[in-house]
Length: 176
Image (cartoon, rainbow, N blue to C red; front, side, top):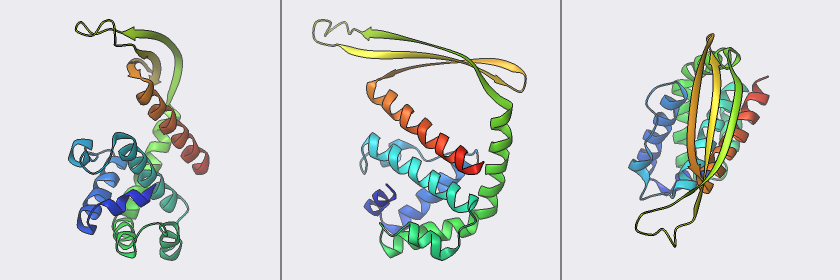
């Protein structure tokens, strides 16, 4: 879905790619609010996930410039060159972040999970609002300490989470 990058001018695409790499490296990622006029939530998440996966894959496979450009054949040449320039400029930084993340993934383990399905009701629309929500509780052991994480999400957010987890699993499998 990197093709969605073509919705921005090349200079803005360049800035977005740098922000994606920032997020990949543990710094401030791009904010959806900055791009809400350009893409829907689903498109935004798909673009973010595909750009992140693309950078990870290109660095993880030590792809050449030609291989990177071939992987970006869906977008215009100028947008592909912008992505390539970000990759060239920040390749080592991405590599370090991937190594750090691989090491930290092995130190954090999911200990337990629980889920509940709720029905959200609104005071002004009690009779017409029927929004199922999923409450997901995770117990994650990180550096020896057990940390609970609780999320509540609607169907769209759950589908997005599942897609993100599947994409993350593919990346982890490729790094092995």
